[in-house]
Length: 230
Image 1 (cartoon, helix red, strand yellow):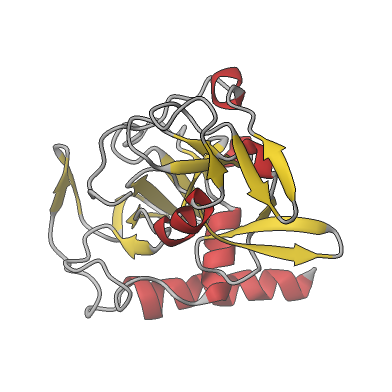
Image 2 (tube, one colour):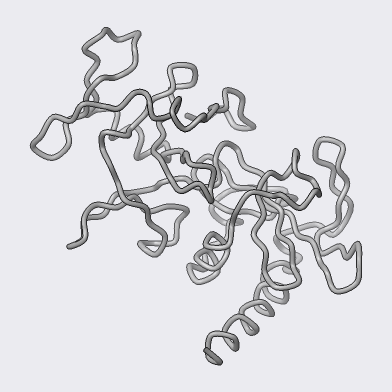
């Protein structure tokens, strides 16, 4: 246990000193999001610092105020990504809840998060002795959720494709564009091309899609996004 505590202490310092305060990645002046003004690393009260993040439609994590959001400026350290996403949950702090609906606490740090769509974005499927899993947010195979092909869901409003995740992350997760395009080739539309897909051919079997799980979970999907990508 002591080893784990030492790891968290060292990792927290790593986050702050080498990543969050890397002046190549962020600008240390006031940023405005929907009328909210902030400074990365601000300390509104003693012993608390606040940071602000953004997750794009491909599941890449950025500092919210990064001028350019692309592969060169996203967070790539897998240990950090696992640490960050395992602690991610709904923001119920009473602070910035509308603008940054998720939070990933780290000791005295509060890491507020907004998303293009969902915080979890699935990137690829892996097969293990325990079954098939959707991996997410570019942490290799370290972040995963059981994959159920019957739960593939295509939004007729946006064309984006989703799959369930845990309630910790909001119960629904976007599938990365590249993977969604490959999955769409396996979908069947037995009620017509303008209706929702009804089946998916997965492996050597035809799987009927559960078209009602979104409704049963009480999920409302986004229809407007900062990006125009599916």
